[in-house]
Image (cartoon, rainbow, N blue to C red; front, side, top):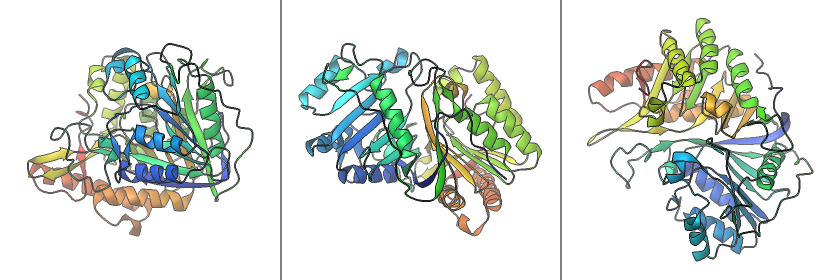
Length: 447
């Protein structure tokens, strides 16, 4: 089985990388912060959603504290921040280009640069940290984790001690990854492309310090080999955003469709939104072959999905998902934990897939048409048996509460599906679950 490289990608696949999946935000943000603390030259970050009061693990303070500390050590610190339009502009978890934000930065005597970047009603959704650009220590972190308090959860998913009980976004499961090697140069180029063309930089409050931010030089070299993993940066970018790529890019979609179609043993997804008609129709073909497929989603998904059910693209996704439920080898599942007061839903925000212990992808892309053809996204895909198997084992062990490393990939997935169905029965009897995963009905999800 060979999962092909998408030929629509702006960046080629590259050999010689190290990929380290980081499961759950408590683990990921601890590693990100540790890398920043040892950085010697630069810290650049792409921000989509941000709670200004959220604190990083081990007493490190807020996002502002982390960047202020890096700037005080002489690092070149830059934040590229999504400027939302429409209802999102009023959300508590976005940092808008406005007088209030300017006042916050002025009050802190902020010494780092920021630019805001909009994409109409869509989202600049990349979540990327890039450290020590252009040096031998160049390191990137790519994934889907937002900078929110609920995203700081650890794999044990203890009940949070903040917010309201069982609040939708207070206990989040998510995935990021650390990358080193030649593909970090593609992350470098992506940041330069977006920073230099940030849409709001010349508008009122669209940059910090006002009218004093500086463009970046183009990334002019490829980083040295750091390991032996083949990997590739894929993206979703609308046409016309950047001069370097007037036709845009839609390689994440192509990669998903071709990877799913190539499956021979099993397919595993984690995604906040599992409603891409195009992907689900390819999954139907995989299920017809008898290949087991499991998709982990939030049991209590974002209410915007139900509200948008009349949209033709969303409606088609619901129909395709319901058809998946007709196959006995398909399982839709969600995580939860029994508390003294009842079951707490653990919100799945991750955007990842694993196929056949051979290939995996981690990124910011939801499986819905708007992430493929509207929002600006980034994934890293990798072809490596050891890394992919280790990633699969860590996830299955967390969700299923068993030692999945003793099984091959298909056997492990079938065991996880079995546990999910058993846990569904346990939940009906108000009993503790094995791990967190339990099966849910595709017909009723997100309705």
